[in-house]
Image (cartoon, rainbow, N blue to C red; front, side, top):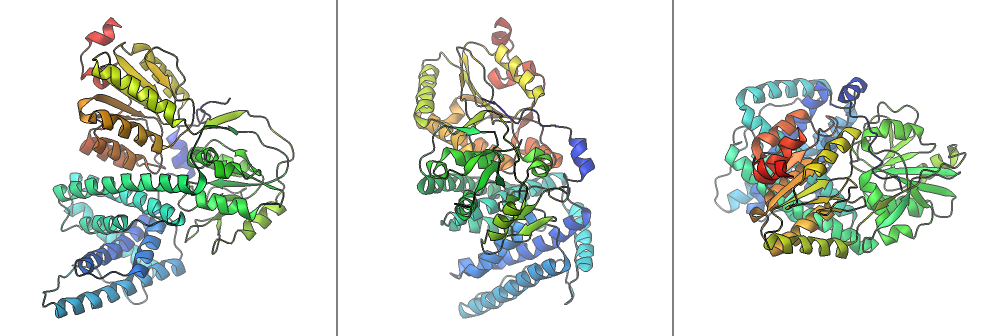
Length: 544
């Protein structure tokens, strides 16, 4: 079995910057500020209308659509930007009229949202960019460093919640609380009212809703695709036409599989999130779902270019395509990124035809397998065995090391950790295969659903605040910040992060997370272990 197939990914972030895939342009940043200001003003009036018992489902859709473009950092052209801007301004005008009428009817004094600038009727890209630049300068002057850090955290969380809402919608479910949480965050992010205390409360409220949404997405996936179970997923390829499906949207993978049935087209998945689809029995019924391809999101430039067929990036995949010249890229995003072809109304026929017209794999490659999914009963049994020893005071601390993504440098780091661990501590190794009396290794890829299940199981026996628990995050993705804050809110005291690619999580945001929530980065193994196990006491580690 090819274990931890991500381990050879380059972590040279300077290379990412050189290729232009790590950050957005200043002009796009300015444009996003203008769209966000429209959204904040709209959120203000929609929340006021909610208090008066009014709601508009169409406006909800337009807000999610506008946020979708910001989530994937889409490079708008003139037509696309004006369409988004016009829709938001039209919705805002309608919301103001309804709000004014309801206030008049109920003899209430209407509240007014202070706007920061006005755009002309032409509302060109250039005008919006200039307005956005001025607003960014104003914001940086008015907000303290602490406020800006909080603003960045809330902005990142907003993106994560938007992605989860759309995933849930594609699974045929809805979660209204999440929509109003989005509106609440947008309202809180206004310059005049952004207090630290209010911002932190908004983040805490968001985390509770995000946690519920993660559980709802997972339970909906189980409902649609069956109970998850461990499975060996092939990393090999076979001769023939092929399609690569990347991202996290299982529903779109299912639609591609149905569209390609009986057409002699093999389907492969890409990335950790899509790898998990293989663990659901419904997907295993599709015999042309052959296996998994490539090294993951960080290596998508190489993976997509080397795949001899079209690539579908499911919605909000967050891949950068402007530097991929050899690949045929399709996407279901509302506004396709540069270099990608948009799938309209879930019609995957263009994708199918592109696969039939591509060269496909000319020969087979043998690369072994990788395990995905988990055995819940077995893990639950081990958790309770460890908790029994905690209650008997035989185990004083528990460490969790994962997710499944590591570099060679990280492997060496955790080998040192394993070698230093005292006998009265226990490690759940969720990424590193290591044998030991006080180490339990989950020999499989998984997602955060497993992490939450483990901690929920522990909380049934004892509050996490009353157990010395440390978590080492070895993988960064678009949900990393939300998941870290969720673990903190669940009661995990000590969290340590690996170095994240600036493409996925900006260094400024990591700095903000450390500042507000006490998350630390991997440093010297001995020093980290001292902190993680007993707050700096040297004795038990040195004796070991």
